[in-house]
Image 1 (cartoon, rainbow, N blue to C red):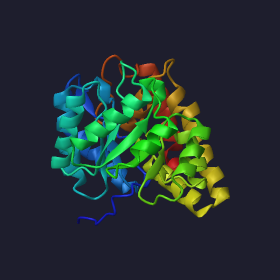
Image 2 (image 1 turned 90 degrees about the vertical axis):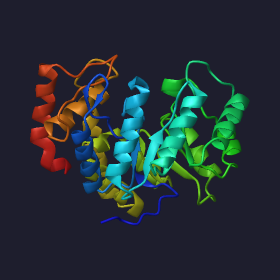
Image 3 (image 1 turned 180 degrees about the vertical axis):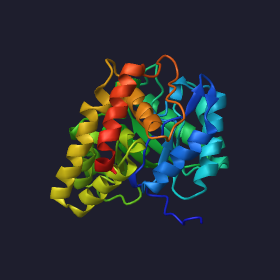
Image 4 (image 1 turned 180 degrees about the horizontal axis):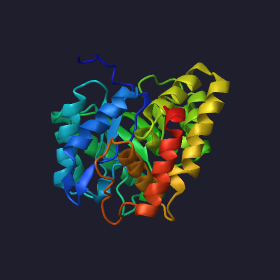
Length: 309
């Protein structure tokens, strides 16, 4: 049954969905259906594809388009679908945005183009130009650790005057920046502010944020939905209890490997251990965990699954 949704403003838990892969350029369509159903069953309020956790910069354009088409078909309007269109090529971002609209995605998500660092006035011109070329709402994505460029507060304010720009996902981890966003948009009911750093999710909701995009919700969607609900109700005892579980993911699943890629590898490995993914294949330049690391994650999932779900 198709569920009627209020897509905008975007709110709640919107996981940055992993991209199930069988090989370097081969989408695992069966596992994709599993992941979508796993997330929706967990109560999420939306799904974000082609983000960082979705390995978007490592995927071919062919695979990105296939992922958009199959995800939108599987979701079938039950929750909003957000599609990442960040690229170094203006034309590729526009083309993917228009394809997402055609496949009935809800909105697209844009971080500053990386490699050539744009000045803030240039960034405003770039985003407004891009928005003029598409017919789907756009979310800003502040990810300075990857792009090396902030959407500065004044830039967000200027861009928000364009009514096709409907919100921002902040993954900077800078709570002063986040506070300034909340202050700036406290009277705007049509502009969403989402937290990208899952460790700060509860705090951000208690402060008045609209939701979050936690990578860990791929593994345990209901845990993050419960945390969001508790923070909305200001049930501080429940928030503390659930926040403790969220933080344990950082010291276990995300901390098995040696490098920054351990977060992604851990989530995919955990989903494979749960039977949601057939394979934990990770796109180059990374590779999946070896057997030693996989066993550590499998043991943790087995011992703690009931506690998280």
